[in-house]
Length: 99
Figure 1 (tube, rainbow, N blue to C red):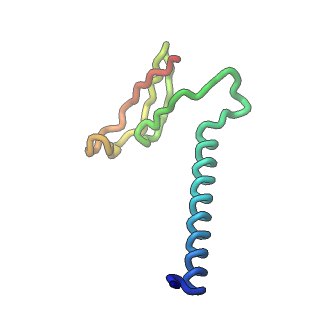
Figure 2: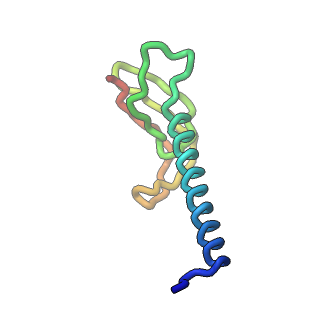
């Protein structure tokens, strides 16, 4: 009993090749993005990235470190905070930077 003809087999093989190609492309993009984030620059020595803080995407003006804390001053104005779903004043962010 024939379920698929020659044309059906060709379409099935083409679909399989397309799916495998898509998986390979997506996997390679994921590997490249991980390498970009966790790559250590040549200038760094005896330093390891253990975390990061995007400061909610706010523009930063000045960074001051005092002890184990970094104080980051932001530009004037308001910025939308997706965590609280509110517009908040750009003041300062305080981040702990000790290891």
